[in-house]
Image (cartoon, rainbow, N blue to C red; front, side):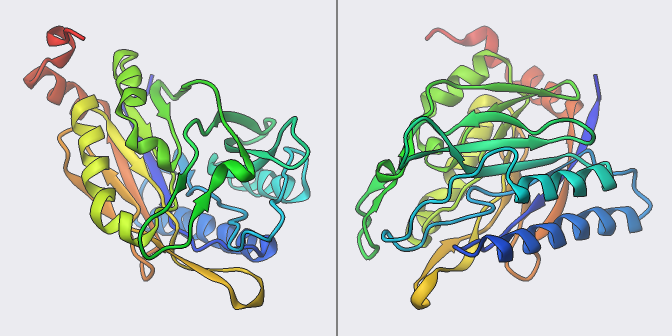
Length: 280
């Protein structure tokens, strides 16, 4: 069991061009590894990316991509991971499921010299009408995941979620009861909801669960065909168990590294022993 791990966060502006998204991801993956190594640090333990890493549907008329773990793009990324020996956690990709026109919004883990692994499927689908924004109906093209998932990585227990899941505190309450150390929230928040809700929700989840919270995000202009585009909020965050923001990325600085220390988790839980006080 590791006492600490170093995690690289990658912010993106993915659109409907899969090749462009793939090249952007590969570049940022290498940059965060190399920049971290130049400072004389030990190698990164993991790199994490946002929701919709390889494809973000901009127009409702655009067919949803359906990835499988043997797709060329996934195999290309697996080769990159094998070469650099730093695991990659894809916040989400549209993963082929049993329905011919619908996919899962799924988190996929790539580890050196191992097969790609699906870790989580998004439970709560974003069907909303936000003022000033086009309607969003994720249920038109996405299938619902069915259950929470806790993932063990180097002795740290990660409670998995994706974007809109963030608004449902009962999911994170389950993770707190399982003594998760890290909450993972890859996302693609709209600008209005991001400005109003993003940071406060992430800090609240970190505080109430007494966990680190890692939230790599889509940020900026995501482009589709025929000059269609969508603006996402960005501000990829890392928050500690006390609720302190450790990283806040932007378009000029789309990568960063955070150290997750088990001692910090224990310190917060020792000062405010919520586990022994829970009644519900």
